[in-house]
Amino acid sequence: MTDLPTFQDRARAAETAMRAVFPPTPLQRNALLSDRYDADIWLKREDLSPVRSYKIRGALNAMRKQPDRDLFVCASAGNHAQGVAFMCKHFGKRGVIFMPVTTPQQKVMKTRMFGDGHVEIHMTGDYFDETLKAAQDWCAREGGHFLAPFDDDDVIEGQASVAVEICDQLGVAPDLIMLPVGGGGMSAGVFSWLNGRSSCRFVEPSGGACLRAALDQGGPVTLGHVDNFVDGAAVARIGDKPYALLRDVPADDVLVLPEDRICRTILEMLNVEGIVLEPAGAMSVEALDDLRDEIRGKTVVAVTSGGNFDFERLPEVKERSQRFQGLKKYFILRLPQRPGALKEFLNILGPEDDIARFEYLKKSARNFGSVLIGIETTDPANFDRLFARLSGSGMTYQDITDDETVAQFVL
Picture 1 (cartoon, rainbow, N blue to C red):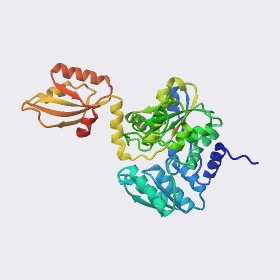
Picture 2 (cartoon, rainbow, N blue to C red):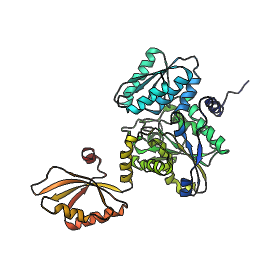
Picture 3 (tube, rainbow, N blue to C red):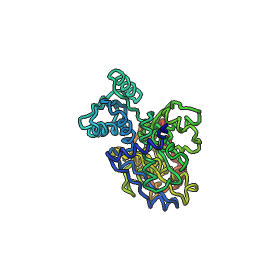
Picture 4 (cartoon, rainbow, N blue to C red):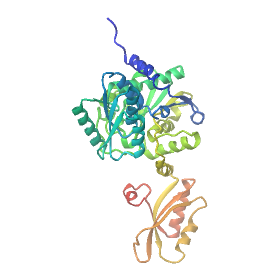
């Protein structure tokens, strides 16, 4: 009796099949991070795949296992759609891709470009749940094969090829692998293939920590609210199949990062290293900072999962990074409506305090007006000194930097 192939065997076969489509993505040692953390830090550059994310792997593996299927259907607002489109062209299959109406045109155009006549795109639904239902209903009517982005055994198996390549390129399993988590397909695949040969840490955005919630609750749960800023990992519910493979992961091995903090790494990788990462692709690098003591002297691989970054978002990324680091604040100043009042305020500013925004709001009384002030500086301590001088001068102000309700209306 022939033994059935193991998960490791199947992932290895998937990795071998990929060589007909694209070479292994680079595994690069990063000197900046290695010096910073006194460790041997490597980046697995999934942002350099043909579609600038690892999603091509799952699509390739799932489609090669369905050679008799001519129609593949998916719902996606980004990377999964591009991976499916690319592979539809490669295999000569027909693809029907459903995308939310709110999807940026850049992503729609890239999906159409990768499909090159082999895919049709349906824009439907303001929210992804609506788009997903429309795709599944259409697929049920037309008889196509629905290709889920992460809750699919063949997709998970294909994403596991990331681990196969890492170990082949490094020549040994690393001490630790940092894995970004969205729906859980890649993290479950890599974790399962390694089978304890490397430690794994899983990284989620605070506005989409569905793995952490599932581990805390003992099973997948749907988050009540999702912050879509880290769009490649903004998932409300981890897949059932990925969770089944990750259910025994200690909750403390899941690191949850604020969205604003992730922006710090996006900017540093871009400005210092010349590496373009989307927010989800930067998570594994940023999370290294939480493990300084643990990783010292070890070999660590951080998976940079994607680089589909819309540069129109760069001002927002810079703003979020500055706010997280305490280098930019907004406040409402109650300014007397008399000659010289503005000059008095300007004299209070320190030499490193730069006005980034100055906007009069409606007057709160005859003799006073409210002003929205945005200040950038070079050291968070400068704000303590500025606010002390404001209080000493008798000027009334309110710091609204972290007041999300107010910020929605005035920032």
